[in-house]
Image 1 (cartoon, rainbow, N blue to C red):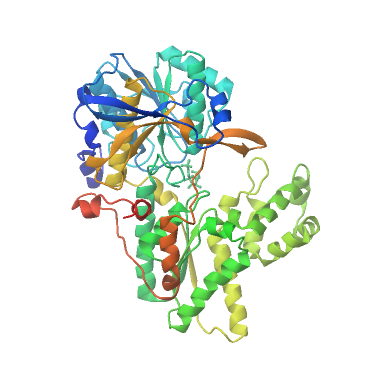
Image 2: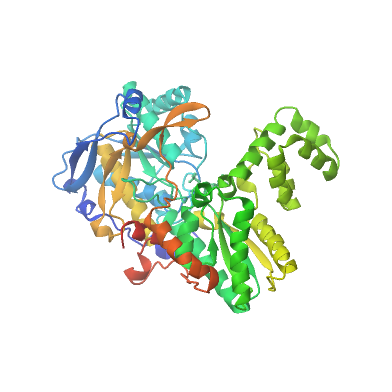
Length: 553
Ligand code: FBP
């Protein structure tokens, strides 16, 4: 096979397991901790999960393996957006499964959860698995966003499992997919199918974390990749001294990615959506905040800078989400066709100004025309505005330009303002996993199999103590129901894993807050450079600033 030199070298990398899993399968025993309670709404969650609620926390340790000798046939699914390291979860799972019993079988359901429903699969063998070790992407079996959430789907899944004699399903996904893993586990237990369900925490967004799960995999590599690019741009910007770069980074809702990149690169400005919501900031206030940095730096002779914008920020601006809600309402049903038939933008504008409230019209009026038009072009299958497609990097750079023009007219600003725009998202989701993600993911997969072998279901594979060297990591499992609470979703109260947004009183934000004034004015850029795979552990194995700060390091 034709592979790049790095890919060939990464095949030879041996991922590091937690010390307690290094002794060989025969020497891994289980230690049960205390029974667990859900983080909130205990009675409701218990009533919904009578078979899987309240189970004990698990850790593995060195000792005689007492798991029952049972042939395992496991199915694995990759669910949702790609995250670096997904292949290693599958490899770790496969290696533990085969090391336990060479007769064990691993099925990979293709294209995400729909593969299970459609019985579309492949069976892994050494030759196939070996092509994917320590590589990025999810192309080993593909991924998809079909949700496994209805009774009908569960019944189909149970049939497919029965057909192949499957004893356990491993779902590698984010908060929604793992919530669904818990519901599927409960269904399988309630119907005595004998099928166990184990989840693994994935998402570059970093929003699947809590007191048990320290990090979702992929966050480390994706943020390192974006930070490398941002650092390179900072260096370019500091060399040519002529542009303000507006850089949007992925993260559907939470701003963990933006914050981590800011901690890694120390840009002039970084917006944090959670703060925007907390302070109920308007678009105009945000633009003023950025314009203040531009003005200050211009007064020091620096007409250049870098601004990081989290992908989801506009949804956190109260006046903007009110505008979106009104637009969705305004174009509901047949009114969308009526709007689309209007020929010119002027006619459409008149239709819009009649349909919007005075407050929303004020917000609409300050948007650059290209963004105004985007709001009406990009609709999802339900006819709603797709907020994630709004080019917020262009929105804010244009609004800052307008603010600066006003300041120029008032004689308070005399600088130059030229802009460049970037969106970093897909560039990082399939990068070669860093050593951290290679090790963490392999450990999650290996550990998932140990949970299966010891008969657990409705658990998330848990590897913790991640800010320490892998030798000191702690492997085990946590009942998914422990992480759940009730939330309002689509008009109904649903049991879900709580999504972790950036905590404004948490150490990573506090560090950023303490330094951002200085960064806004001076040039304090940091250049993290490319991910290093070979070399000293102090360069190659370090994880994120977010995790280090959260752990008080
Ligand atoms: P997951 O939550 O499934 O991990 O995906 C996260 C994400 O990468 C977001 O950062 C981004 O908003 C979204 O997926 C993009 O989705 P798509 O791949 O469908 O364009």
